[in-house]
Image 1 (tube, helix red, strand yellow):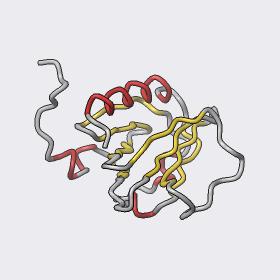
Image 2 (tube, helix red, strand yellow; image 1 turned 30 degrees about the vertical axis):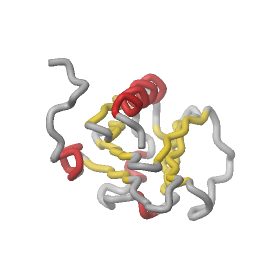
Image 3 (tube, one colour; image 1 turned 45 degrees about the vertical axis):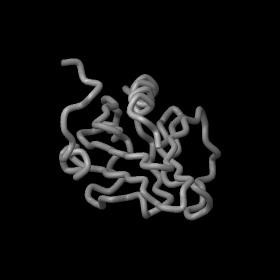
Length: 144
């Protein structure tokens, strides 16, 4: 399980690499990670990433007025790639759960290596719609 400083470092990395880029597509490959259905992930296609935020151990990628919120849980990993194969991956093959590809051809894969599937992905209009975010208290890394 990534600890809070690691999640914050990941947020900074993603903000540096995604902010201002257009999302070409988001491919859900393991339906078990999707915790919401409205709006659909395809609503992100063609939107521009505004920012990447963090709420506790949740990462929030804001694009087009929507928020792609993910929690890596115990066995989740986010792997950045500078390019992807032309053919999309086959669902259900291996640990790959979700792929986000930008119009520039780079992006990331979300994978889950554990046997217990706890990785979560929510696409919402407001991060407070995610139950795990709504019940968070003060952020221990916040400047006060």
